[in-house]
Image (cartoon, rainbow, N blue to C red; front, side, top):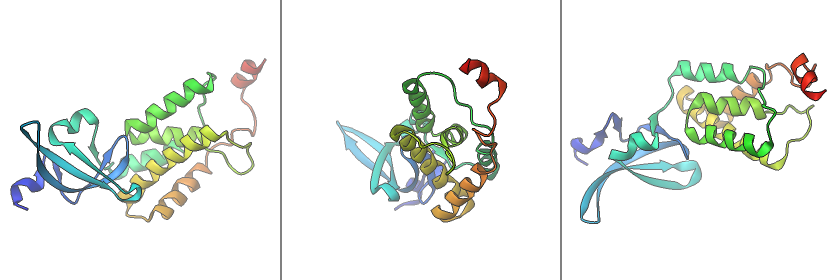
Length: 185
């Protein structure tokens, strides 16, 4: 491959990136493809864990929200976010589920860490519904892959690091605060 095509718009081959709808992937190459008589330059992104290869037109990178991996301070901030008190709105589950899904698919690490924090359940807490569990696992997966890539940890080590931080959070059902008592009344 010639040097000219190894980098486009600040992204280069061999670099890990975040694609909002799929999480962390690696740019394996930049290729040209003819589509409807036009020659398009495409980033070829491999998502190893999902056995998925995506071709993203270079010109669409901004509009699809593809970004570089978070900086270490952003990882630290996300890990601090999960230690906070869960903020669960008192709206219908379907509305909250849509909001959680939008946060996960935004590709924004801090938004994803909020979903991890809000949907986390420790062993001594009541079971989650199937859909809560699905959203939690999806958010945890996205967050742990990025933490793993940035901190150069295995995926298992990244998950353990996030779980360790989650366990520092104030326990949800330890003592209901006054606001939730009023809402229950």
